[in-house]
Length: 402
Image (cartoon, rainbow, N blue to C red; front, side, top):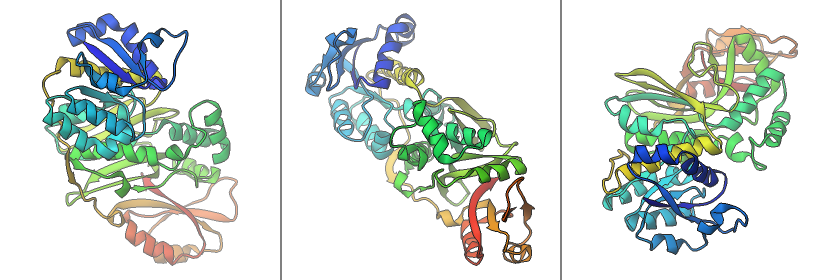
């Protein structure tokens, strides 16, 4: 089977490496040998064996009937969407790791693949090498998915781990993450929560079968967290994680991305450093956990190649994916229920706090002066906002799941 790879960056070169190193075992699983015929890139790679397969014109790939599978690992929405759409329309299968593309146009591309009896697969778009897309499509198809909680961004999880363990501030851990290659020069997609937002939009769309627009998901990053927040978290026996959540509450679905304090009983409590994890709760299955390296050249490439193998096995048969273009209207975030950890200045009396919020748990942190904290009972976001608006002296709040 002849395939083409679009993009020879980190993931693209990883795909080539996986196919070369595991050539024989992949052939046994696919039922035939998989050969790369073309690699599309704007650059040349003199001295690299891949140079003999480099092309600069996408139409060479598009017009070659021998190419049955196209691997898109360029990233971004365009020209990826145009190239992938054209490949599917031409009867070629597509495998991608591109979360931006899948979150924005997944439903349309799945439909286009179905119309042309080919497949559009995207396991690597969420969680890197962690298998989560295919389990949602196949293994959990008998369940109603009630909840998905995910640590879906390795960069921020590394940063939060370092802030918790070393008492470092945000700027210091960001610089360290950039030096280690975990964070980009412009880290906004990670630290503002945009990356995790797109990933939970994909998982929610698959879980509930309709389009969840990432623009509709409440998203809050980690940039406002301070070392003091982590001192309180330690005192409370919690850790702070950037959680991406979607939940079916019986009446509708809400989704959000934000820092959350989680207790030791939460399945994601011990997920540290650059690791990712996804917790899924189904009405029949109960709890399931998927854990591993959520990024990196070879883990991501491994997931892409697994999709290629599936497409080779089903080259002329569309594998149904339940994700249609009808938009899922998310429930109002203001009606979501949480506990809240709140920091306030010392001049705010405890009587005022209990008068506003009812029974709360007060907490102080070692070495922190001029303020204290408290944890509310579970309440709707709307109710909390109303009460917090009447509290003069509030420093910050973090949602809690403990």
